[in-house]
Image (cartoon, rainbow, N blue to C red; front, side, top):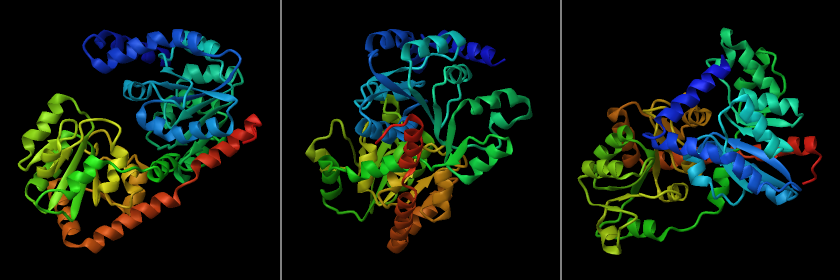
Length: 416
């Protein structure tokens, strides 16, 4: 049944690839994987294989990759992605020696991939439980780990009809989970090769925080013009439903400024944002000093800046909560500002934790968003206190990378 599902998924991807950009990139990229491994893999070197579904999982694994490169340079890094949204952005990542797509999880692909890659150790980040790859890793006695994982009772592993698939969890030598609930759930099903490590994303966002650099165009936007502002909202990874809320509020409140870094920056989406604005705006990519000086809203129409831009905000709105789920809220929280997001956050431990400590706020519609914003604008003390709670939560949660690496170092007998 599993192989049938994978086969159908692969067939659909190939059929739509001429018309669907992401599917096309994935199908084309997978065709290059085996050639990439043949040409780039050094047969005299030892490799640690990291697999990330997409960009978010890559960021979770990045602190470990960089720590291994620094402390154990005798190991090289092989990094694979399944999604184009990860590979296309990080295909030139300097921290990895080889970056490529992971081919569909057919038995022949898994066997061929591991024959060519021959890793000394494999690390899967948070998600992605590919049965054929994991079975092959176990059969070859290659130590395999899952890091920053989180499990919920509604996942397929724990369905009565999926007991065979649940067996893939025992293919891992060790599962590092984020919380006690995940640990208890796994033990309920007699999966004992697990421990709590926390989430490596906290280490990553704190690393970015410590490396923060000034962005002159943002500083110019915030400190030029006829009027200074006491409140700037940073809207990160936003989608149209998110933008309906905060742009409507922004249009009616001249005392605030707005920076929007949308999740998608294609022309159609940028024009949609522009069409809703009733106050002066500028696009970062083409703005001159005069346009920035006149703007009340700055649209970030390029990738790679958002995690550094949050430092300039008084509060952050994180998109995705009216769709499949919120994007990275920790990138904002580390700067000591409250984070706001939509209702679809239940699967995200950090969101629930931030709500619990009053550093994060979930809104369900324009009424709840407007009320929260009114409170922040009227009560600066509440705004500052919420930001402190967010920052303290991030600092309390640091250290997962070290916990995980201590275990892996022990298993590989690597001396840091």
